[in-house]
Length: 183
Image 1 (cartoon, rainbow, N blue to C red):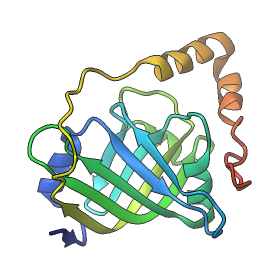
Image 2 (tube, rainbow, N blue to C red; image 1 turned 180 degrees about the horizontal axis):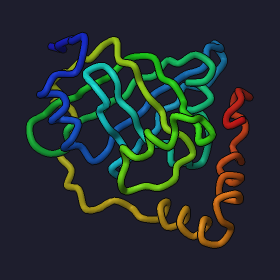
Image 3 (tube, rainbow, N blue to C red; image 1 turned 90 degrees about the horizontal axis):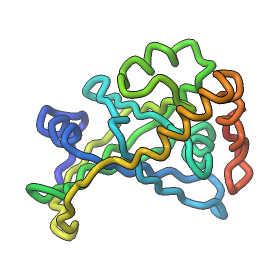
Image 4 (cartoon, rainbow, N blue to C red; image 1 turned 30 degrees about the horizontal axis):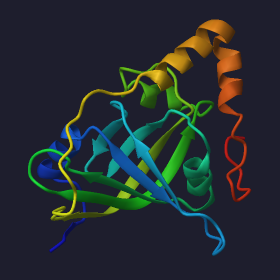
């Protein structure tokens, strides 16, 4: 049976801190639009307070999450236990994209000591926390984080500098449904 909370408690914060992967779900307002679900890794998630979390948008193959959040703010983040006791934790709320040209960006980026650059930082103002049994989630052993994305960013920065690196982040200017991404 699922348990519902208004905010994160210490038990949920501890669970989040132990997870190696989380999933972000968003959708456009259009009935014809595509629902997006993205896996995220690295040490790229922080709890800012009992009702606010943030995670790094490190780029990827598309711009769906950012575009959906900019359009309507709806976001759900899910963690599930692949090791230890079974559990699924979902965070529901209103997301906001803090892009690299936003004056808040440098301070938020300091919350992620393993990274000195990102396409954007997404925050979620939580209005519902729900955990459930997770009995259907398999056990899996964590081996390591993949390093390709970070190596690619470092290479791009070393080769082209900050201006070109930021320009590369802008390549995803629209979602698959035509919503604006990075402007």
